[in-house]
Image (cartoon, rainbow, N blue to C red; front, side):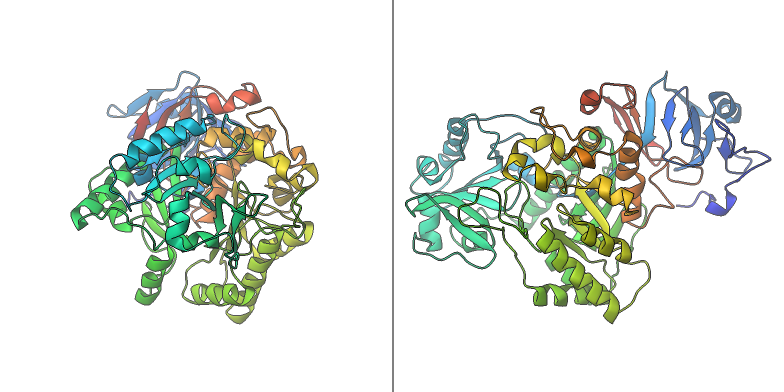
Length: 566
């Protein structure tokens, strides 16, 4: 829907606006009174020309003026809705550049860990939940638990095959690490998959073992494929599948709004459910849909390109095409052995360079932005090689090649990224949430891990990707993590990669809009842009940096309409 507001109408100086003056009002010309105004706020606009303000006005779904409280009040008419922020803080709406909307897991599956915050559990507690599910599950069907985190267990050790054998000998049992790259199985699951102590590790994965050579239950990366086609899982009617998908997406949208997210890059999920949710008026955030491999094939065959859609639901890059393993689960592909490894283990490369080259070229030629998952420096090198090759073979302006996670970087890799104008979506909450895993890497490696500082200094527009479900998606936890590099346990790793709070705000707002090629439409508070913003009870600039994650999100607004109110 158009409200007659375009970028050409923004007044750059003189007349109705004094954009260059500190605290001045920037406005869009027009006789219409605003629908609503926000006054008496501490507004952080993420606009260099006017970084702070006290108030703004909205007409339709767009900001039409930004400035002082007195100037904005003067614009109001008799029908204008007034929100007095009473000194609270307003920022642009937060944008998550990488998120798996696993609402169905949250609603319907057994959760053996806390999806949203640091919480320690016990192995006994996990087993009790799984036993309860097994008691209502027919023999031969899978019994599964989700959101397990191996370093947040009070027992001080990982769950293993012997623990899971206590759940059942008649059901295949699996505990899924929240990182998504490891699985913990019982003996029945190994039996059904035909995996024994003598089974060799497949390409790109491992069947881990105890010191005596027997299977310990842990399965990594591509080795997990052996378990997909064995055992039985519940089946649902088409109507049941549609209902579960719809309610799962609705649940995620509510959670996103509650946290202050106004835009999310969805890694797969049901596109049909998102469209139905929007039709029902229940979609509370803007979606940039990153299609899974099956949907991607359909889009390519139909000639659909990245960018198709509107301000609420748009086709984005591809889903993360996996080139290596996990940071949190210690399987990412590095050029050096993991510290302390007795075998010289360097992680898992999950696709050959030849196959990666072919995939990237196919997607790029089809007009879909390639997006690859790469954590370790080896995998990032492979992805950049594939991107450079595709760019030579089929030159296209302003591709904005995407690398999801992009965790371990060197100066030479960053230089190649800058030359290609790559957009990296780095883990945002990990420095806080996963600080208990960084000792597996050590400070020397961590100085180059999740390197926001190095990327911004090089002029690379890094954006924030929580990677939920692997990491919590709270934007305020992310701001704290990026600015302090201090974890929940008080440990600081890679302090050289800290960024300022203003930089972190830009990373989680305007840079997120840049990632989806929507920086002209959203990501900052400026006349003409979509009226997406968040009202916070406290100013992150004024509280103890260790308290930023605890600031209350009072209100989330998308297109001028509140999607969350505390």
